[in-house]
Length: 98
Image 1 (cartoon, one colour):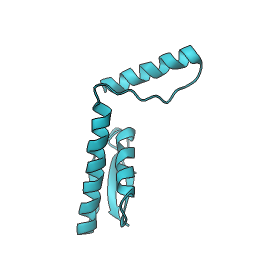
Image 2 (cartoon, rainbow, N blue to C red):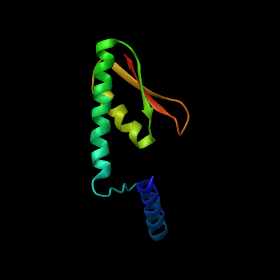
Image 3 (cartoon, helix red, strand yellow):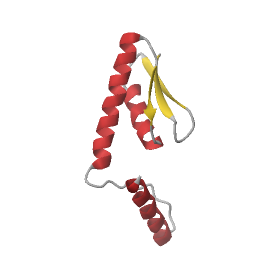
Image 4 (tube, rainbow, N blue to C red):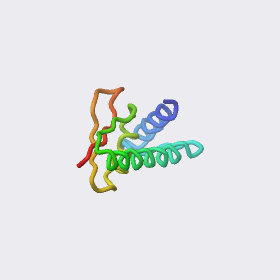
């Protein structure tokens, strides 16, 4: 939450200085890069379990940034699809057989 708040403040400062809304992503001490790796692995592992069992799997609620990474990881495997369900802040990724 702190990183997201710092990122939004940085975006607002850039917008005020330049007049252009930026899409910058702030990372402190590699936290986002590590989180991206963890989420990608989570999506791949969930997709493999769904392929093995044929059962849908709902993951824990995540932010839009986190869900996008999981969706991308699931999309890399054949035989499974993913979708988001629920309402913020409890929106989650569900992995399903294709």
